[in-house]
Length: 374
Ligand code: UDP
Image (cartoon, rainbow, N blue to C red; front, side, top):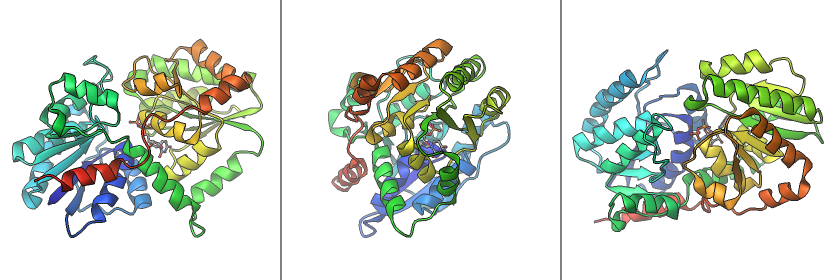
């Protein structure tokens, strides 16, 4: 069977890398090729290096001031050549990016079977998050096989009249990636300059609050509120260090560096490679983020997460009690952080909760499913 795995951004790469590795275990059964659109260039390459994946096709489509129209059109046009060259039987896309949506359409035009990993997440508001909710809905409509991470995501697909036999609940592949990473970092010969640098940055005994943020809907006013909250946390908890790997998007970097530079216990750093980020998550006391992937990873490491979003397509995490939605309201972010820092019982309860996103066997399940198809 010929399988083509397509992705373009850092989080997609992290979540698809273990699937590539799993397919590559069975070269007698699968001819597996990887196509990267490189919607994120630098952050994508870091992930490919770590997982030792060399894409057969690299569309290299990142452009300055990229917009959704040209990006989508470019992906479709360039994927045509890849699909014609390889003629895959199955094309795998992930989640909700522009790469996902455009690759789904291109696959439909070409006629291969489309397989959607991390299928079925919904906010039920077609405008939010923008454009992700529409990207994943389009991928869902076109897909032949759907791999939702949870039962809740499966129910969303069933509501959309997807046939049950074409759905397999797998858990999230991000846990497979986390296991791969923890295993590789623990090897005696593993060396990472970034982790060494982090060891110098974070001082023994000080609580680390790890911060990340990048979402489009938080650009502007949202990030200003977030920065004001972080400033207040830093001031009122001088015994804690806020460590913030700042996303490369200029709409994020500008306000963050303008408002938070030169505060002694706020450490602004560049985005970390995946192993360094996982290392830092494991060292941290708690996490404040608007990221999807981080919400799914952190409970496996026992770290409470405050989510700076108003809506969520990850209600499992909220219900399981591993995350709290705080939006971008300055006082809410501050108060919930303050509570986790001061109330040990509340902190222990949150960090002991079970991760609803699976056990790290998602990729194995997907490969078996495809293997068993006629
Ligand atoms: N991540 C990383 N380096 C960083 C910040 C995050 O490798 O400096 C990883 C993180 O472990 C998670 C993924 O990137 O797996 C999340 O990506 P992001 O927050 O950009 O996107 P989202 O998950 O919201 O789609």
